[in-house]
Image 1 (tube, rainbow, N blue to C red):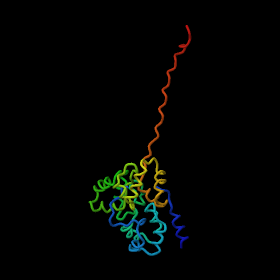
Image 2 (image 1 turned 90 degrees about the vertical axis):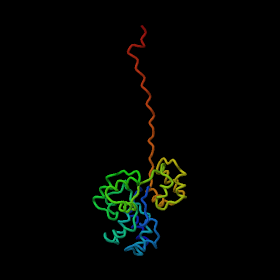
Image 3 (image 1 turned 180 degrees about the vertical axis):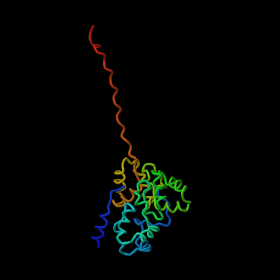
Image 4 (image 1 turned 45 degrees about the vertical axis):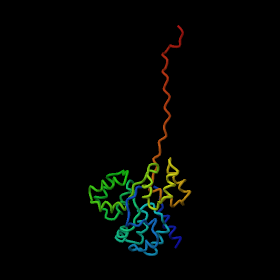
Length: 230
């Protein structure tokens, strides 16, 4: 069984790619306990074992690919109302956005129309042009906007699933970040690689462009014959 899970998890591994929307009712499968997962629709011991063994999932599309082996589309749609991995509003592909419960063609278009989102507040404002506040709040449970590691506030960092005061302190400790590789290295002192990968989904670093040295001004050429003695 363990070997099967290893193969299944590795087959959906991917390179690494917030302001996370308010979420009071939707479980994050990367953080939920086995007991919480088992209470969800269509969950079995075997499915829960696969989820907990393979996590963290670095995208909802990866989780959906695994669940599709055990659950049909309608079963997964019902499940995702209560369990979902937030998607990156700025980079998620159409196929991943379509996994958001209640997503239709019109709202799919609107989600993509206003990219790039700098704040979750922008998402609220723009989607509020098409649906009421309750529906905006419902959609918000399934999305996030990545945070700039060098600019985000303490409270913004706390919106990242699973991040508490201690990890916020570590995030701030190593500023300024010059690259995402630096984030991996420093935060990797406190958590394992899989957790670093999970956290990395929610942040980014704006790398400063190296300033080019100014070119030396060209010396004007002396006119022909200027150095000739009369």
